Length: 634
Image (cartoon, rainbow, N blue to C red; front, side, top):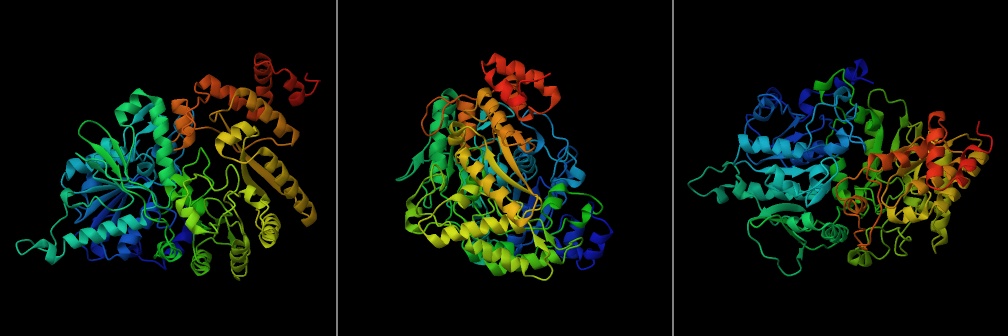
């Protein structure tokens, strides 16, 4: 749906100055001649709390700064987009966007995607590969003394030595290639606010001194290096007490097992409440320094981030253009942050953290009411969820135990006995939202963790709430199809994935079907599966095909494993060793091996039948042919 007449009618409630400026003309409308911070983003500018550049821009605005956003600058021409707003007083900020740019641009088979969901009309050519690097290098050439600060998913997950699947090589931390001066990892609200507070102090009259004007521009030399949750490059530094020194980048290039061992230490520190500082030598002259993260945000701090004055709409420059990612979340509301699942292939906990931070009921309802006033809203919320739909307000019963824990997952291999798994707070949110007169129905589009629903707590009321939540979810919040993610059928592969045994999916499927019958509904359960994950063989995929056929599934939501920076699975895929055991792990690496696995998803397609039969015979599993196709195969 393009931003059409209805959008323009709604725009009458807004003025151009209700968005952060993107041009000099928009600056002048606000009476600004210069800026404190200029943000460059690989995504289109959508003024919405799901888009990182908008969040940081609004947060800095709330700190009293003059902020502009340059979305998707043209890096191919005379670089006018990088010059048009001049020099900022404090720094340039750069984010590649809501996704790693290479995941955004390429499929698992390294083919160019036909659509970029974060670009007007889905155009796939509006951002370069590695925008964090490309934008930084351009800005450092144009304004060498102006600090450049990286943030966002791409920079966050590439902060140390990492494997790049698309180049098939180990790359150093992204500060090395980009030339940027500072990197903020994870969710950036706290570090960015402290950074600007510290820089504003340097520009105060007292700091400027009698010979300098109080509005002196900040330079690279003014950047502080002790802010939590930041990464910087030290020319010469010695490890201090309590620091963790990783194997150097050159050592990892020579020995894959050292890269695997590094990752375990990185992940464990990322999941600790009070982490150590991490050092990694890049070469003889430079060392990357990763300062420990901040503690998770408080409810009040998270509410503040969501309660900033977003229009929740794309910038007017995109009039009559469709931005696919905005269309997906236009009528959705995010109610919490973080995920304690720790799935081996997922980067959510690596970026957002494993500790759940939940919004207050009041903040959620304020945003829901704002959604109901949006153009085209017909009374249906598309999602009332989060990284995992049903982790709202879940945390440790004894938080002092959590603060000493370094487990990457609170629910694998078993659900932690200290984890409070009560679904009652979430039920209260659903009911409060559904009670609003403007809401006809709220759907849950985020992934549901059925292992939390099936978990039997020692507290009877918690178990009752799980059963009540399950029924309410299925009966009232499914738009005909409920998506869940068993990911595989092999318990051996699931163990490597940090996912629950497949029997739990089968158990949940029975509950789903029973509730549908009792409620007189005809809804579908849509499972997600992955092929070619480390540890998975073609035989595992053949057995997956048989099991899902027996359950009467024709699989739709499937994907080939894509190695992305900073996941356990990626390190195992690249190095051949599991980071926690350093034992060898098989991975399908060649296109032929990957195709041999992926084809089993589509056993029901006539064009795949003969290839699959040949593959089953080749692997010595002719016994599975009849189970897939029956004895009369034609």
